[in-house]
Length: 500
Image 1 (tube, rainbow, N blue to C red):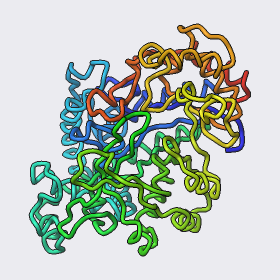
Image 2 (cartoon, helix red, strand yellow):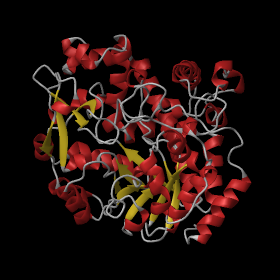
Image 3 (tube, rainbow, N blue to C red):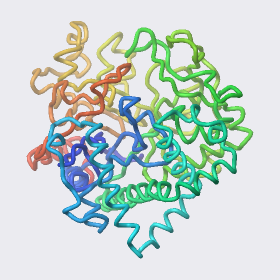
């Protein structure tokens, strides 16, 4: 980052689509066009790895750090690319609802994946697929095998599989793969569809001078292919069961802290292995994104470790992370580390030192600026350093209008004019806040799309510490108007952030 620029936070699931969920089809390309015509430089998304209903379809709970989420595959693009015929797709009426219905979408897409794979099996054009399988072999073989074994055992977690499969006995894996050759190839084919569409979308975005900011969860699920394949890199017992889990102490979002439940890393063993798994992960992600926002960055300095048997996060403790040694290894492998550090919450000097040493910008969130002493609050725009990424809110916050109408207490409301250093009217508060952010010294500004639209709490993406009614917001068809684009462009020009 060296110039004053701006971007939009908009997850793919929230894009417009007639298939029940945003995907990598025409809605994504239309969004890129909208962002480009508005003078934006960045498109920030949430993680794009596979999700599941058990974890509330959270993109931060993934079953693989490398695989793509099949739900984001566009049926429309599958027709365009010849993998489906128009007659293969019958869209259920239930998918026309405004919010994402993950269960219905999953059933619908599984049917069309079956049709596409049946068509592919009859095709002689396999060269591109074979090339993909060869290039992604390091993670794809295990992911496909994991997916099919899990399905064969009714979706049960890997620690409930037969011992020979649970502990990856070579002959057992070989025998299973031989008996389930078609299912394994189908799992690879679906990943091929995902990455074929993703790379096409990214190429288009880059051609419009839009850089994509990917979001990288620091942790993976216990029931993931990564933990199944590399149990020694996580704090498990000899039976493969969890000894400790991740979370965070009491904070802005929860008085008792958050018990995330992911396994924590055994950083000592990772270090002995040259952090190889993480090096491969970053290598993979830098092919997908132009920038990497690493969620819960402070976990590299110290992480909140909770004994697995404890039901409350408050019983955890801070444990030292890999720190400088980890990023020194990454720096040797990569010419550049375009990392944005999610440094929200309780941030200590070791976290700050780590970010400064490797020149990683941190985050500022305007909605956090109205409490406490505004003179010392780092989220107040007047206190921003140049080298930071400033947001009106994140995926975990309410919208600006939702916050003002439902969450802001009298003290916070009284501080609004002081923080913004200007008067405001409630109905246009979102534009006032956006303009103040744009005028700030921060090099990069990211605004969630619901704030540009002035939505109330119906535009909220996630409420932390809850597992229902999250990740469902979708933009209404026709909301990305020329008038809105012109308004954003005018503001970016006014604040010297227009991407020309």
